[in-house]
Amino acid sequence: MRHVLIVVWLTVVWVTLWEVVSWANVLGGIVVAGTVVAMLPPHSGQSRGRFRPLATSRLITYFLWELIAASASMAWEVVTPRNRIRAAVVAVRLTSGVSGVLTAVANMVSLTPGTVTLEIDEDSRTVFIHVLHLKSLEETRRSVQRLEALTLAAFPQAPEGHDKTVEQT
Amino acid sequence: MIEVAATISFGLLGLAALLCIVRMIRGGGIADRIVALDSLLLMVVSGLAVQAAITGEDIYLDVMVVAALLAFTGTSMVANFIERRGS
Amino acid sequence: METVASVFLVAGSLLAVLAAVGLQRFDDVFARMHSATKPATLGLVLVLTGAALVTPTPGAVAKLFLVILLQFITAPVAAHLVGRAAFRAGTELSPETLVSDEVEVIMRRPPEHQD
Image (tube, each protein chain N blue to C red):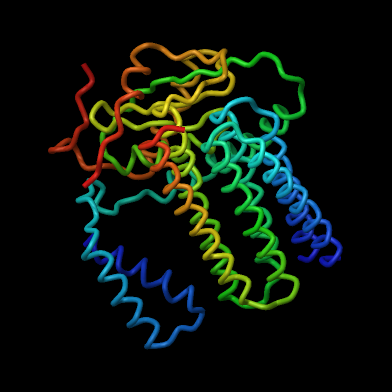
């Protein structure tokens, strides 16, 4: 099912780039998309394509707000004279081991105020973040975990099977 | 109205591009330079979009898509290079 | 409609200038990446949205939004790749950066060689 969805999405992108919806374009798109998917098979995902629209819109709103806040805080950074620089690299452990969730959170972290993702360790579900102004380790961890919680609410994952999610001890 | 905005836009983007080039020259290592180049390409993409909007020629949009893709691909390649060779 | 688009264009360009100034202002690669991802991406989104409001063709609008989507996905990944590579290659962090030992160990692992 996942393969079909990806082929459909890629074909849509292909036809968009050609700007003309014709049989030639659609068929060509399917061929190209099919070849790509055959050569690079997608992960067998845990989420089975489920998503909750309300939670997703909440996630998107939060994310857009954070992005705007990030640019505002960058503007402040650039203008104020240099001092108070306390950069740090922080390790944050997430609860879900699903690579899709890890990737989504890592991407969003890079676009929120003050943080950029440097490294992801899938085995230990850890994300390493470069923080520009460290107020406290806890605060950084909490904001990342908030992102993760919103993501998990929007895209619920299948219950623990053979993924890397670990029971909370 | 839109013409004025586009002109201002081009001016600002040009300024930004110039600053990126300065960083590319001053640098500090390959990593700084590739980050500056990536930003420069983003300015180019924005400029192309404005141009396409003003003139209505859609060809600029195709160039824009390619530029955006190349920016990412190029940056990844250089990152791979840095990792193997040291900066 | 045109007014909104004009505002977006100018605002987006201002953010682009901000991003470029940030590149000058910060001391080390990692801080500069902050500047290259966040304001640059938002600036691009604003400029492209402004352009989309003005172009008549639906195909053009779709292409612009496609590039915006692409940017959201690739900008953080590019920053991640460059940041990780720079860290592993031993780039100097700006002197006040705090890095705990365990973070050092994990991040300074030798690069994996993909086959």
